[in-house]
Length: 251
Length: 324
Image 1: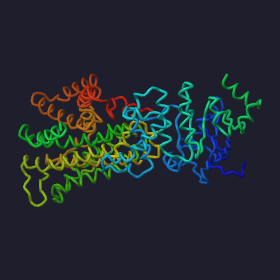
Image 2 (image 1 turned 90 degrees about the vertical axis):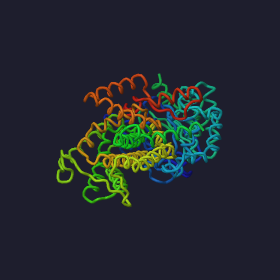
Image 3 (image 1 turned 180 degrees about the vertical axis):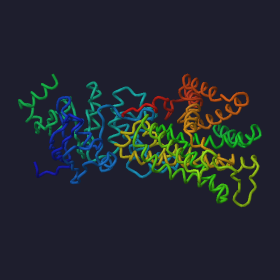
């Protein structure tokens, strides 16, 4: 595989909290255009990895390369502008803003209009059509005028995905997009993700093995902050250490 | 249409104000309404609870007062210089303070406010220490006579209105929408690609510069400035005005400022303990109507129409240091 282009690569990525090593020497290569799943039991370091990749944390040691560029320690906004967008495991939207404004703000983020304090907010109208398309793609266009706080949980998750898609990123980091969802809601959320994945790269943290098996081309197994194994679902499903680590941690 | 009539009525009320109350109080209301509205850009729209705004209002007042008394700088240049000075002062102070959130931001800004107070108190050769700056004249550009209090009110009115219009434009601009997003969820705003620190700093500098403008308008009205302008009680008073009127609403800070000043004027004719009365009213309003006077009225009106795009946050949402 080293011949194929890696859009994202980590080298020896290590993260220490006060007296706890959340991630230890993690090496990761994500090929462009693939869906790459990260699995592992709770506390394996998956969310820490995402926080490092999106710039919310700075690693104790190690490097992160995106499209050949070293982005280690870059602030989150710069990483987002380079084309890495993330969703959050704990739904992270703007509760008092309408769905339309949630998405329009995400669309505006890629422009310079944000600093224009002397202009009317009608500037945002130019994003309305595109925002409505994105809302439609996650099944929320009929609720565009509602504040996000009024949505039930499943639709908030869909909005969360919509915000991430609105950034038109080269690389999407999806942190448990189906967490807490019913099977139908999970399927409904995965559909727009599948659409987008056609010409983008996705790194997916997911507990639902059905989703992982159906979507991902490669899987990395994390346990206790280390990379235990990497391969396809077919390769990994029979490996004893993977099953033990995963089931042992979850049980 | 109803909205236009409302604004016209407000403008008319502003123009007629010095006929209902004495002109010095009327101009005071202008200055404090601008101060409170400018502060709400930070408090209500960005979620930055600063307890040191006296540094910028008072800093602006001392700047305008000294420039006028020592160099004869005329109105409105002296008030505009006050805005510039307060904005420049905000750059380093708020640049440091906005690295913290919630109650920690409140503590740091309180400390900065106290620092400014001590500098003003100790630098007697410039500020007059406890005596303050007295006998500030009222020269005006083009030799217009604004020495009477009524004339000054009508000179200050357009400048205060311009300041208010700028505040209202800022919160209803693309920039203002980003500020709302930051208030709602700053981590999410940052991961969308907005440089949250720069937005907070720009919001704070604009807010503080407009607070300085208010300080300038205020000091020329009184003709003197003393330490109380930079005292922490001034910082506290503007917080009370905004919360009482309704933070994150356009007219709330203005209503809060007018109400507090009119009450103070009315009550202080029969007791010096006006603070006890306004304090009690403040506590009652916040306990019963958490969104302040205008916030509560807006809510009642909206309940009859449709859900609000961006309702004002309740007091504890801004004050709590959520998400560390």
